[in-house]
Image 1: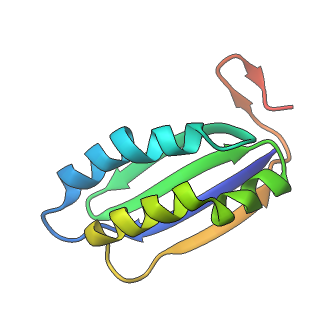
Image 2 (image 1 turned 90 degrees about the horizontal axis):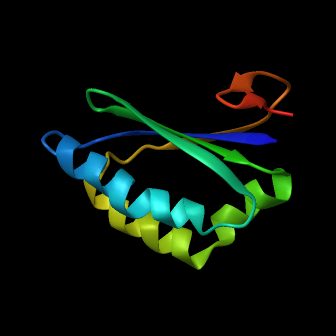
Length: 102
């Protein structure tokens, strides 16, 4: 399993719009991607973090090439500051409701 972390800063006054976009647009987009295992949207003030879980490296890498993902990023960019960061890690252990990760 792979965890992908995406960090960004929401523009001042756009927090409510960002949260709605994450729920109504980003989550359904992720759910359509092959290998998708789950998503958590986190925000502290203007700092946001999107944590996604993927079946394998290929699935996580395929996200970047997805036309639907590209269109989603274009749309959400209007709500964000100029800098974003993405990190990808292999899951080595842990638990979620329902049991162990692997």
